[in-house]
Amino acid sequence: MIPQRRSLLALMAGSLTLGSPAAFAQQDTLAAIRAAKVLRVALEFGRPPWGFKDASLKMTGSDMEAAQLLAADLGVKLEIVEVTGPNRIPFLQTGKADVVLSTFSITPERLKVIDFSVPYASAVQIVGAPRSIAIKGPADLQGRRVGVTRATTGDVELTKRAKDLGVEVLRFDDESTNMTALTTGQVDIVVQEPATFLAVAARAPQRQLESKFVFTQFPVGIGLRKNDAALKAYLDAWVRRHMADGRLNAIYRTFHGTDLPADITQPK
Image 1 (cartoon, one colour):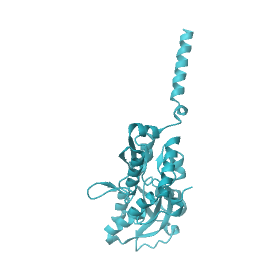
Image 2 (tube, rainbow, N blue to C red):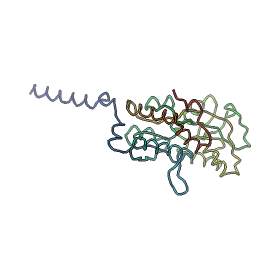
Image 3 (tube, one colour):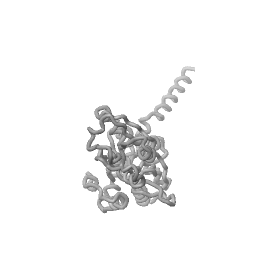
Image 4 (cartoon, rainbow, N blue to C red):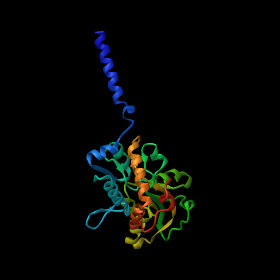
């Protein structure tokens, strides 16, 4: 009985070792993508001009074109996994997507749980409100209610500064809900990406919406799981190559109407 018990314990110990986090610390998603001949990209389509659906419901936007370029360079089929801001990281961590290419700003909080490529774009968050509301800087937000899209960099930064600024933060699950709250008067002030804000302002002239000031700005990278060294090396090299040949800047210019800042086009 004793030898059998020892054998059983040894088998259980071996199983625990194989199932431990350390045993799966290193991944090779790049090899899996090439073997499957499919790249699964998590992407949002409620954030024009980054990702949206046109009048014929065709997926488009700067992130969509970047994803298409990445899949073409890998020589694999592109499979889009539609996500929202709050579920981008869960979808990545649970293996529902290989990478996240969806206005994914590189922040210290996110770097604790996932990795990023070097930046391929830049995301700005502005404070917007009706013309009648006098706001020139963060100090003017004192005592006001501010809408923001949940789990975005705007949410992270606003939450971080809410107590010092004395603001009440109202979080909405996606960009369209945040902007609907603004156009219907549920909130009078939002933190939002400028392209989305200006597009909605043009469709709701009665609200006389205008951009007030830049609230924060972050570099945007391709999100990937931790300890995926081969994939990170490939993505970093891919971004640098298409910064050098101008392809990523051309995509950004087409949809955003401006060039990428120099600190993005000349990555370290």
